[in-house]
Length: 112
Length: 116
Picture 1 (tube, chains in turn orange, yellow):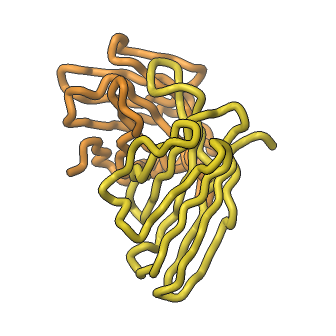
Picture 2 (cartoon, one colour):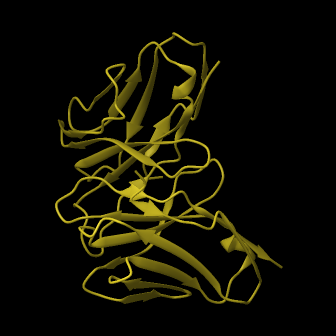
């Protein structure tokens, strides 16, 4: 039962353009969402998060958008850089819970 | 380096053997988590400690798996009678607070287990 879904296993983008990674969730109790970036043979690294009381959170080149009614969030990277090439995981949690539910990841390749 | 550290980074073992992984969390973090990641999947929650108390266990944590955090600092994850399906990356993470706006958990680099 995959409560967090990333339906695009891979994405290729030209350097300097926008990368948009998508994530859908099914559990309406989720109220906190995070994006992690993972390089091969390393653990996930936190990128950005958003609470359900907001619909947008921005940190430098990274912006996360949340559409609660559609149970959908997206991560925008502008401009994309070759160093952004990695696997990106969406994760979700609910208040009071002690675990994160992760999607299956999207592999982003930024082409120089 | 003051991040989460895990040992060993790689372990190859024969089916039926026992293996143990160690995790040293960020020193001021009282919350510690174990996750498992298999190829093509995202990390899956295994268990959670607050200080030395194991407060939550996933149904993925079969009776062959045991985790401890004896003094509320480092933690160990032991897998007994390993099976080929146990082959995965075992990730440890720590945090100082629960999940709420602005908080996150910090992952270690993981311990790769290959059961042959």
